Image 1: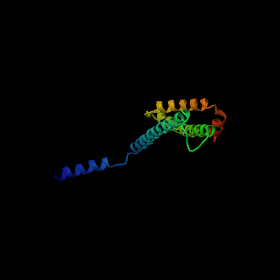
Image 2 (image 1 turned 60 degrees about the vertical axis):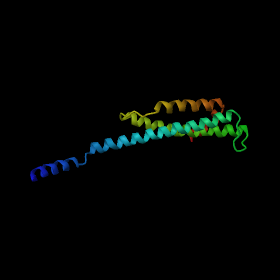
Image 3 (image 1 turned 120 degrees about the horizontal axis):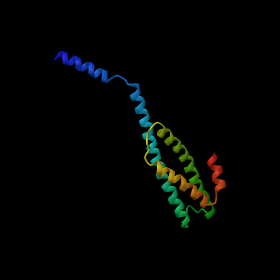
Length: 134
């Protein structure tokens, strides 16, 4: 039994050794999992911004804002979302560059296109481009 215990102890000890490549792979996987979660949050946030835009289009009132004020607020929501989407897209690019596929990337890209379309439909490109550069 002592021989088996000794062999088992050595085997377990070797399994307990820190493998740098395993730690790196784990860190990369977690980095990309966090990216995936961030992308999902971005897609969900876009849905809410778009909901507000649709409500504004239908003439629903928001906090006693005039129509022009509401258009500026909605455009700014899209601009702010686009800033964050640009950062998220950079994160996605890093993950795909190391071989990971990020779920909902196509949804994020569709949201980016749609956000640009909304801003164009509001004819507020000058305001949007100034804000997007900040």
